[in-house]
Image (cartoon, rainbow, N blue to C red; front, top):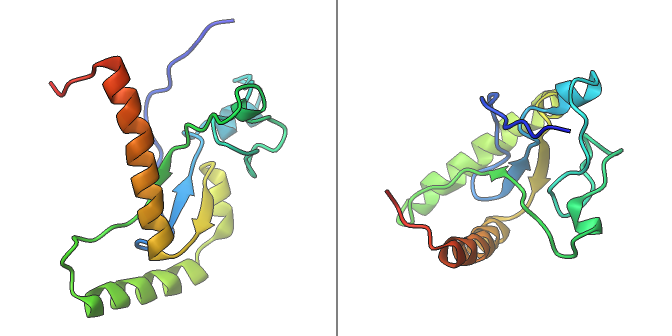
Length: 140
């Protein structure tokens, strides 16, 4: 079996600003579905809706989660009225979105509040910060 590094990205969408994220599987679902790629597991903490036949790595390595996610954010000092209008606009657009489009790109919308989104960012920053420090990585 050979390891093949994925190149290229499909267009992505996100749920609501500061209130949710979209997980995706790097546009590989088409390759898996057609048998061009044999997947062994997903790197998300739980089974993926778009690839239910694949176990999560966490089944074999407890606590493992290397999810990829996208969200919308605004600068800290953005006026409350602007944040509210953006939130409402996104909610309206997400209400009429084509649900199948997310599945087509391997995405899974994850709803939540702006506070939950902030906690996610803090948790991910802490988790990956430890990895960067342990590996001794430095910006180039």
